[in-house]
Image (cartoon, rainbow over all chains, first blue to last red; front, top):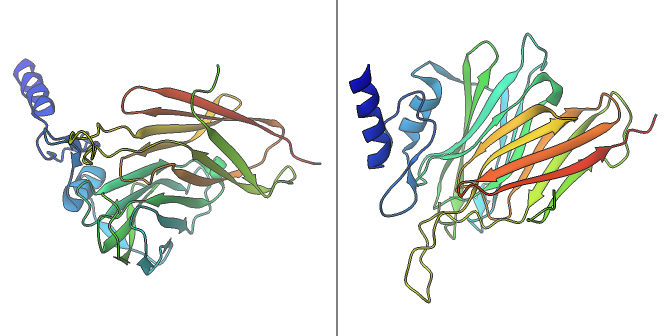
Length: 155
Length: 112
């Protein structure tokens, strides 16, 4: 047990592109500066390898073309009764080609009344924006949309 | 606590009743520096400085929380919905990766 903890602390300290363990929610700082985490590693860290289903219940709104990659509006609306028994637990905003695939995680509760979240993110270039949704029953849904970026936004 | 950073909580619509579902928007002036950009004058990398955690509470009880990364835009905007149960105070607490902590509150005043 002690040796495992020791190795874990080494892994955290070396700051190499993320080892995707379910507890490693954060991308790691690299010596060059900036967090690095691939889309696949991010999904694995979030879902722990669980099945993710593409679903029409997740409405993802992004512009088809973003003139300014530094400010891309993202809106997510998940069809959900948002009751204690059945609600959106979390919405994860991811991108497929940014150096750090994660943008934001939003943990909702029934008090939110709607599975809705909006923000503005940076896109380093043309890529997909992905809404990865965790429901209260532990299942995962997804919606993805491509955004064409004419001027990249250092993501 | 004096607010070190400019931020704003907005309710949409501005006028609402108990039982309504409103939008709660939060906007804050923050560089959201990625840690990958060079300062053109010094040639050195600007250190990462970005909001990494936000909690929305009603009368001290959290109802929404967020983990945020440097990939969110500068001067970030966040929007969620909330059911109005009565009068109260909405507080947004947020921290950044350098440990800077801030807080913004707004009274919730439903009409009728």
